[in-house]
Image 1 (cartoon, rainbow, N blue to C red):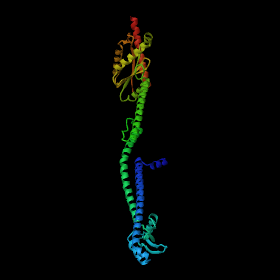
Image 2 (cartoon, rainbow, N blue to C red):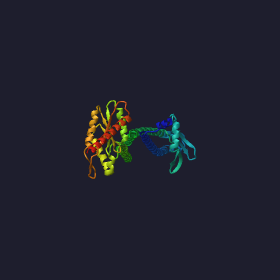
Image 3 (cartoon, one colour):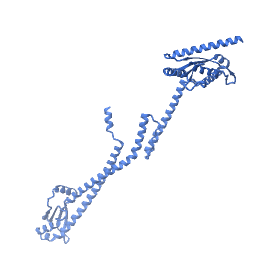
Length: 412
């Protein structure tokens, strides 16, 4: 874990990486350009120095010609020093045609940087340059000149200073330009990262990345949005599938009513809340349902069950719930029942609704009676006890109705 954190801390952000890239590019460009222009300037200085030494040699040739002819060392030295003392010359000599040096002049070495100047002059300046002294077309002596590096050193220092200033200005401009450019790059990426973070942490698949001005980033955002569209469609499909499976698992296919699994859960919930609000449990089944199936077929039996379910629902209050437990058995949870009379009123409405004939799909009609028993929840009763009481009350009602019907048939 520590290695992972340390590795993450050493990573650069995109903004830092782009800033470094712009800075390196700017410094490299300025450095290369500075070196190129410095080399060009040095070549120009070298050319200028060579041309200047040639002009100085011509001046010496005119001034010291007589002294050379008469081999006058003093006059030659005076003529030589009078000319080169004010020129960019470190050392000047006049050699006769036989190689004997007639005059020599050396620049005073008072500058503390003279060593550096001599090294630069030796490295970059032409020399020692030799020029012939002619008289009547015949060479009578040789002038030898060596330039000094004072001005060359000043030039290099000035060039270095200018280059440093340019580097600083380039770095500032690079940071400014990088900051402006980074906004166009990092802002879409930051928004895309925020959307991805929200999707990963909060599962908000409805968020979308906004369009970007950069083509590649805009295509990346479009692809990411397309992926989110597919994920959202898949999530919606899964939600519908789960809802459908949950409905199938908790509801009856024929009547659409909640089945026994949901009945058990709601009965447990009602018992847990029964201390605050009483409720009643009704058990119902259809009289002579086997005979109806035998006489009218399974389609007729299904029509009776669907009609029974629909009529029961119509007689209940909004808080009441009806369930199909299986076959022709139904259960009703009547909520907020405080008195026995309230449960009996619900039973009476259901019996009255079922007294109307049931119209089958083939047009035939029949009267399907129902037997209803109920039990009112008492504190401390379990779900099993409540169901047993309601079931026993239903079968008692069924036997009573059957006995009444037999008695009526015997009297007839």
